Image: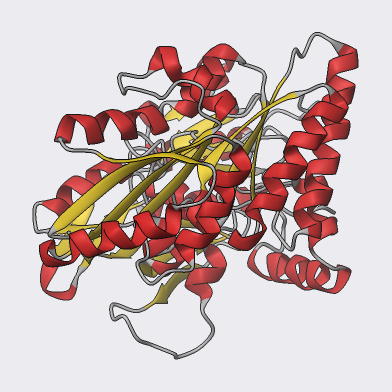
Length: 466
C-alpha cells in the first residue's frame, strides 16, 4: 500500500506542533514514523509526522492546525485494529493517543469510571475490579488495546452476548470534531433523553467524525459466581444448531464461543487445555450470577445443548481448567497469524437462528473454491470470525480467495446479517458497504460526516465509500 506523492509538511505547521506537544512528543524522521503507518492488518502507509498528545487541549490545538493547513489527520490508539482504519493513506499526521493514559475518576457509588482514551482495557478492568466492578467489553487484545480504540470500533468481545457492546456501556464522551470543535456528549446517569444520541453515533465511527479524548464508562458489579462449560459435537452443523437452542432458553450466557474442527486442530499445539480428538466443533459456554442460581443455569444450558450430534458436556472444575480454556480461545487469532500470516480474516454476523445456514454455506464455499476456511467466534450473538487460509504468493489461490470472499459476503447479507460485527470497516470492507447500506442511508451518513469534518481531514477514505 503506497501513499501518493505529498508536498512536505509546512515549516510553520511543524513549528506550531512543536510548540503544542514539545520536541520529544513529535516524530518527523521517516525511520521513526514507519512503525506508526500500520495496524494489525496487512496495510501500511508512511505518515509524514507523528504527534503524541498528552491532553485534550493538545488534541484540540492539533485538529485546529490540521484544519488551518489542510493536513490529513489519522488518529491512532495502540494499533490493534485489523481493517486498516489507522493506516494513514494520505500521509499527513498520525496523532497517537497512547500517552493519554490517565484514569481520571473511579466512582463506585454511581457505577462509573472516567478515563482518557489511551488507557488500556486491562487497566480499566483492574481499576474497576478493585471496587467490585468490571467493564463488560473484553476484546481478545484487552491486555494491550486502548479504550479509545475499543470505542472507535465498537469492539466488544465474548461478554457482549449478555452485557452488550461499548455503545451499551458508555455514558458519555469528551471529544474533538473534525472541524476542531469541543464536544461533550451523553450524561453521568444511566437515563437521559435530551437531544440526539451523539455518544452512540461517535462510537463505532472509526475516527471519521471526531477524536475521542475521554470516556465515561458504565460499570457492572462483578458476579458472585461463574460456571464454565465445554461442549463437544461430532459436526459443525450440530454445534451451530445448539447455539440457537441455547439462546432461546431463559438463561443468557455471559459468553458463548464457537470453534470449528479446523480451528481445534490448528490450536492444539498452542494450547495447554485438553482438547478433544476427532471433534467436529466445540462450544465454550460461561454463565454468571448468584451462587444459588448456578446449578439451575448449568442444567438449563445442558438441556438446550442436547441434540443428536452432542458428544460431551463437561463443566470446568478448577480455576486452572477455566484459565486454560479461555487462553485457548484467545490464542486462536495469534496462532492463526503464525500458521497463516497472510490469512484473510473477516468477522461477520448473522441472526443466531441463521448460524447453521451460515456454517453450512461456508463449508460449501470452501469446497467450491478450494480454500481452507477456519471459523470461530462469538456465536451467542451470531458473530463469526471467518478465516481464509491462503498463500499470497499464489495468484491462482488469491483469485479464488477473493471470489470466495465475495460470495461469503453475499451469503451473509442473504441471511439478514452484517458485514462486520466488531472489527469495523476501515479499508478492508469499505468498498463492500454499498451492498449492505442503501444509497439514501449512505448519502445521509456522508452528510453527517461533512458536518463533523467539513475540510475532510479525519481518516480520509475509510469506513464509507466515496
